[in-house]
Amino acid sequence: MLIGGNAKFLKDACPEDATSPGSSPWKGQLELSFRRRNRETCISHSYARAPLAMQSPFYPEGREVCHCIVLNPPGGIAGDDILEIDLNLDAGAKVLMTTPSSGKLYRTKGVESRQTIHIHIGEGASLEWLPQGTIVFDGALASQEMKVLLEPGATFMFWDMTRFGRTHRGERFQRGIWRSSTEVWQGEVPLWVDRQKLEGGTRLLDSPYGLSGQSVIGQMVLLGQEVSPSLIDQVRSTWNPEENQGEAGVTRLQSGLLCRYRGSSTIEAHRWFTVVWALLRPVFLEREICPPRIWNT
Figure 1: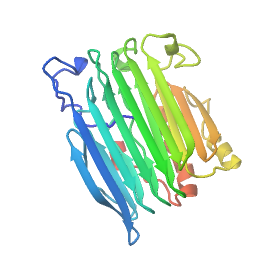
Figure 2 (figure 1 turned 135 degrees about the vertical axis):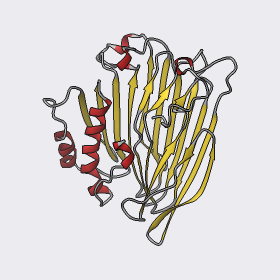
Figure 3 (figure 1 turned 60 degrees about the horizontal axis):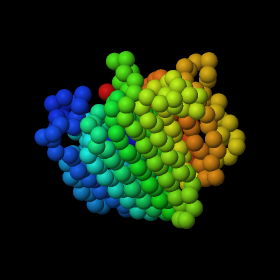
């Protein structure tokens, strides 16, 4: 998952090689805290250092759920860039966060870029972290890390879609390294630990244990709540292999569920995840889905 933004605002003129001898790396930082007061979720603390920023919060489904759009105006990160995001939700707060577009991991000259996200979700609070995906350029060297701590009764819903290579240009991920690490804990108990690594040009691009010749992988998780076997069956039934080109799987976790996608279409993955979201949200958050307007632009 990478924070997207306006790709026209680049520190280097040419995104084909976003690390040049005269360029200065970004050291972006974003801190946001949310609290619940009088049935309303509001921001109690905010701090941003360029290039990270946030649009003013909005409330399309009432004051109880705060919607936020996180911005990275350069559109992505390049070698030696560091983006750090810290989110804290007090007890009972309800937040939905997304991004305006897919983020990019640009080609570099041998220096790794890093993004770290630390999230604390208080007792009875919920965070829906639904970014619009990431595009990994050929030649990118990037590490993405997310660690989430859930208090009792907290709910975390997250999805991400990653495309390797700008396939509309015929590009494959032939050089570079992409790393991803996600940990979700409740107290001392790990609810979900997921670590992935893909080296460009290796057998994993075509192996059935890797991309299997596809260019897009995606995952969606709900954590912090018990999911019944019957609901798992309902989620599985939302994927129709006769109508879709990719592959999908659903796994019941000890306190949640995991959906995985492998295929060639970010749109297909996003469409399926949205259907699953529409099934899960009324059960665990007691409200219908409210897709952010920016997804339609």
